Length: 458
Image (tube, rainbow, N blue to C red; front, side, top):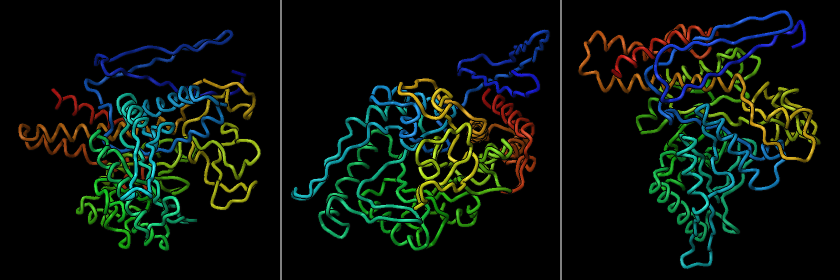
């Protein structure tokens, strides 16, 4: 290190599932000319392990196109090799991507001339790769793409269509029905139906509600077991065919959620370019604890899923139309799409959509050279904080499970003490805009929860 410069060090310790419980110690040695220092490292390993698969659903975007572009990948073998590195960094942090099978989709062939018109659905490439994603990367959910639905956002939408047949035609209805019924049946047979969610329209405006409701009702008509998800707060004009509501965090309404949960519906929520301060956000230039506290707020509201639109949004085609952005040198997430003119730099926020980084060899300086880059992706402090928050959630879930299991054999006073541990304390967060920025407060609470888990497990 050059003289006069501060350099933080971030030390990650991975504890194997089979590690013996107890206290471990080590040291970190720092040396320079005529100087040295030793920093002690102390680690306590609890006598339990978190489950490999989450009880909270995590839905995070991963752009294979950006990965292929920055790593300069051309062959399918190279693409698969590097994608596995990204799937692994997601798995190591207890996260699931929208799409764990980007090179092996479910394939469908529509046959409008058949009698009756139908779809031929081919799962041969998808099945083994999905099975691997479940077994190796422990995914907790995946986005099921549905062809022929139409779609869009508040900005623009396009109508349902299969080939030249619109939704009002009998050919469309027959082919669409055949298609989604096969999807539902196959996913149920494989044990993947509950992990699948259909996220086909993003952030609808009121003018889109009738269109969105119609699409969701069409799905429910032909394949009621497929789960629909919508990035919108509860709205009466949408209610009915929505299984999972996913509002941006400030728009979560506890009273509306209670009413819809009575119908068997679930709630996720998300953060993106909003909200901004004073809420928990995803931005680089905010306290690192915010994303971790967000998961405590998630537990506090009985929300069962978290979504972030992208984790590898390294460049903007609008802001950087000629050469891709270097995400290390320019931390800003800029707007792409939404009719943004080329060369326009509109800010979404520092770090928005960017949690996992390309290796320095692929991003510095710029994107140059022709040889593929196989170096591993790079984590970020915010990615680690999301992992910590998800682990916190799993600690709470495990304690609740154990309490439910042993409640009948425990003294009433002990049950009250354990139930109190399942309540998020004011020292961590009192409301959406009042929360701690001190990680010690969170660690102290997690320690108390871990001690309770150990006692109940014995």
